[in-house]
Amino acid sequence: MKPEPLLTPESDDLLAKLTPYTMTIKTAAPYFGYHPKSMYDMVSDGKLIYGTHYLKVGKKVLIKVTAFKAWMHEQTGVVYGGD
Image (cartoon, rainbow, N blue to C red; front, side, top):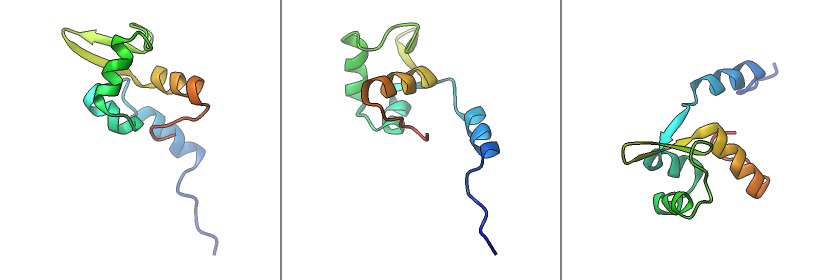
């Protein structure tokens, strides 16, 4: 008997639906394999673009998950964070 695959196109679609639109840097950093300070540095150094890669609510920085994944892929050719 052949085992069923853990991930199917349907489950990939479900995972995409469950991925949040934004994450705080505290949450996004380990998800993407960064130290929080490194992510804050990307924001303050202008590597990430306001409105494209992140949003701000008061002083809180929210990383736009899909846009950050695309940025990472552009930088490295590799996709992280559950893909």
